[in-house]
Length: 230
Image (cartoon, rainbow, N blue to C red; front, side, top):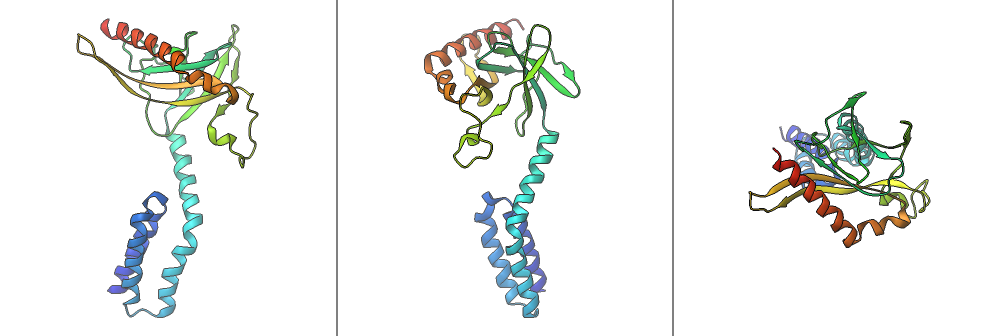
């Protein structure tokens, strides 16, 4: 009976430890399982197998776990195509759940978000959290699309493979959240996501306080007008 309990605890601990953020819980549980197993009447060889195999398999299994979670998460995530004007550069803001916003358009199972020249899109759809399955394009006057490469800071680390040139333009997901603006009519809430089209060496200027604050004020005003209409 002790052997079965110990083995079950070891298996549970192994599964918990596949997520390295849970090692603080999984490792003590694994040790408890080992102790119970060692106190059982199982043969030493069997005990060693159940103790050593999880330790040997943990690292490759952890990578396999993250690969599968990432692959499944991306495949099932909300699919968005963000389409920018041909000469657009700088920060763009997408505000979701706007009653007077752009209608939801779906092509090939992907939502089409067309960013206006001012970079502020009020969108009727809901931007879901979690894994992201986005594509980014610029479109010319003839309707021809050119894909914009995605950029993130980790791509520019010294040990990164295929490190992009810092003067090469790409699109950056800056972040998002929910904002509340108090007002005499009860206040206005809205959820948003921010992007920047820029090269790495020009990225900082788009986050300058004066520039960001100006775009934020325009967004607040457009959201207020939209929500007060309904």
